[in-house]
Length: 384
Image (cartoon, rainbow, N blue to C red):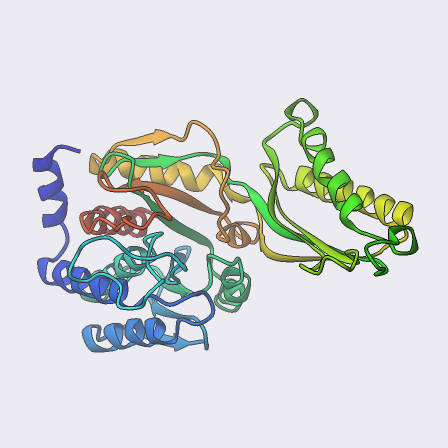
């Protein structure tokens, strides 16, 4: 987006609100908190809206909250979601608002997502809207926990449609990317824990060592994920192999294999999971091992509805915001997909135009995204 157009875009947002949102974003950036531990962050966001709004309803739901603009009439209601958790990554952004918490940083830009949604809430509080608008501030996106908990909002308030964006620093500033269908892959952490029988290292035949079962599983993974066997993207990434103890007189009798399994299509992720489980069970029987399988960090496939994306494309065209199709779904995961399994909605990207990519030590959200996203969201509210 040319500089002149960017300045014009900022001028469409109240300058006092924009300044408040930037200051808020810098505060959030300096105080990162990990998923499910965002107590300061949530309290600061709530306090910000209490202080600067006059007509919004605020609903504290424990680890998350939402604000509402209530309107009379029959127009469909809209919700906009922002996440606010950080990551266990050092912050080396070099700014005076850099993280004050060693080893933690807003390296995915969730500070910017929340500041943007707070700015939108103030804009609607100031100018009003002719439909109900919900501003959802969500915890624990990085671990996949938050959205499932926040689904209660959709049912209790009968929300009709939901939108969210993610910043993407490496794209040109203000460029919106959309894709009908799968936008982010489904994924889950799979833990395969084997239990054998210990023995003296000089008598391995008297014990049962899980190392061989785990080794066979690892060598089988490339064949299980061969692209020729699948319609969409499918991956099994080795996260950790932990077998035995550093005791040279004792044969290993326990072992864990940690995988992240990932699929573009939910049904193909189901197939991959079943294949790995079946092979692990075969290996356990072959080597006389106990086997326990568990899961964590479970993310759905994030799907954008075509009719919701059509609204985004139209609003971008009306506002002069560049918009293009994503070349392919992203391999990474996003828990926003829980929402669009329940109601129509869209998840899209906005380019930041500078800096390092997501989840890197120097990544920092570009504050110039805020007025672009607020303008786009406000047009969605106006036109439905």
